[in-house]
Length: 278
Image (cartoon, rainbow, N blue to C red; front, side, top):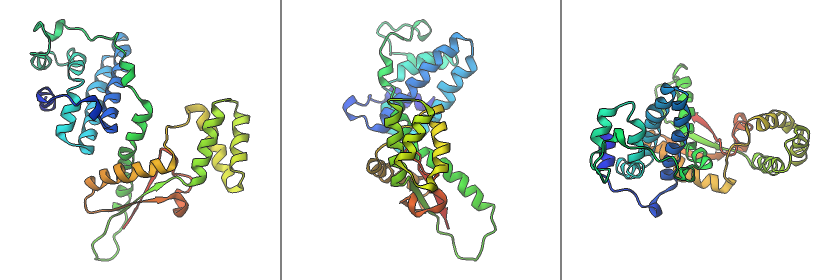
């Protein structure tokens, strides 16, 4: 409620001023809105409201941690009315209060309708959703790594220095993903895709990786990713900044999977790995 009244009081952020993380939040909202209507029509009310309320609140929290409360409020002002309309069946009294002054005719929110004829799909960018979520996924992986470390006995009395390495996929992995992307544009036959991958990376020690990666790619598609240099810039500018805010005493760096043996085949384009050292 506090967040929504802050959004109501804020000026909406101008389209030209929206950053990639702002567009991520808008995309996440309208992606959830697209799932909301089929769930409501099928009377899966819990699914609809868990996504648009509880899960979207997590998205909002992440956006604030990446930017600021004021910036989040300005972005939320863009979708304020749509969000209130979707939440009205769950919390009608609060939504009536928030909707005051939003309609030209001062009608009640319970009498207003969400206009589904608008081209809202234009706000949805699944690639941006995946890329901008990388820092959050690294944060989750880091949490698991730290939990494992805390279970281990501590050696010595010197204070620990937390060192976090974001491990980016190696050049050959980016090359393999490029071949898979190009090949999938012309065929989805497993044999042809497998042969193309093996021609691109014929090294014997890559055979196992390819044999696992190709079937998974055919089943679930190739995850969105940036070119290596663009991804490295994103990691340095966004992921490192985010993790430093989360772990201010940590030393954080970006390294290549070629230098981290146990992450050699784990770090993928669009899905870097994380290593914690003390």
